[in-house]
Length: 406
Ligand code: GDD
Ligand code: MN
Image (tube, rainbow, N blue to C red; front, side):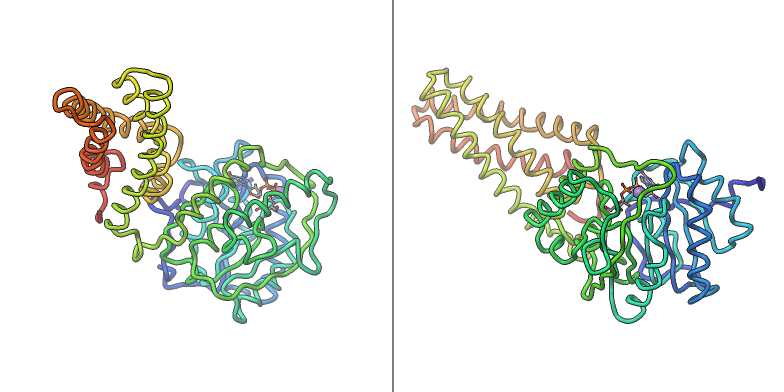
């Protein structure tokens, strides 16, 4: 095996998942194809060879293949590096800080020099021949060309009934939650597609899990889409990395795209919009708060303070969920993971808890000392505390102060 030094590796981009409108280098190429890998050492040589033969027929010298490997235990990246002597247009990125198929693809695109960007699986389940049809579709006029199992010439090889059902079920769910994105293509789950760089450039991407195509259609500027049929091949070497986790990620991705499609720096939600969203969420919390308060205080006969504290805490949980997924989605998507979310929840709770103390003081003052009606007292308390909550959470929980705009 050829000795390899780290300098042969393509540097992994960091920072926001955002693709530059123009390839930085003067040597911009026609086409860059990303091959994401995780434990694919037994497939990598074959796919690189097949792709090279194909692309050399049509655009010799003006394309690159980029393997983006997530530091595979089987050292796929090392095998890929050893191929570079034979295939000089092959570049290899070894990621150690981040994981996951979708972000691997985007990191690859960020390091790419092509005007057309693409992705293909490394395991030969995506037939390489289809690539030339995809390429000519984008060279003609499509912004996006996808290989689809669900158009003429497409299909799956030996899938069980259950697997077909799961795949179609996921698609139907997608159609229900996100019709404008999922409904635009016959195979939204496809991980084999090409697009024009400018169709996705500048959009801030927040992909989750496996389904990078959803992200591209949901946040890109895509007018024309071409589809080319392909038969999803059986895997001959290595193993699939799909687990139940990908189904959860998929759902999560659908919901966040639903609430927050197309986030580009130019049209980030304005502060006023954020305030209105926070207000609307607070309003929903009011119903939760009043509902639970009514149940505990008027129905179950619990004390005023107990009822008030319990109903308010339930409303806090309700509000956090909505604010995190909607009001502050752009910030929470930059701090992903359960740890970060838990931190935000605790901060939100702490701030609201302080608000709750304020709330309780006000309610008691108005009700016990000044003889206000209990519901009116609560309303005044909530209005005051909402102002406090918005201001402090804006500055602390989602840390708006750390970003250029508010
Ligand atoms: N860098 C990186 N990081 N690559 C990954 C990771 C990861 O975390 N997980 C998987 N890959 C690579 C695999 O090595 C393979 O090249 C490709 O991504 C697809 O992974 P598989 O695990 O083989 O996926 P699959 O065959 O079950 O699913 C494929 O089928 C869909 C059709 O339903 C995916 O490729 C989808 O994109 C495709 O559309
Ligand atoms: Mn596969």
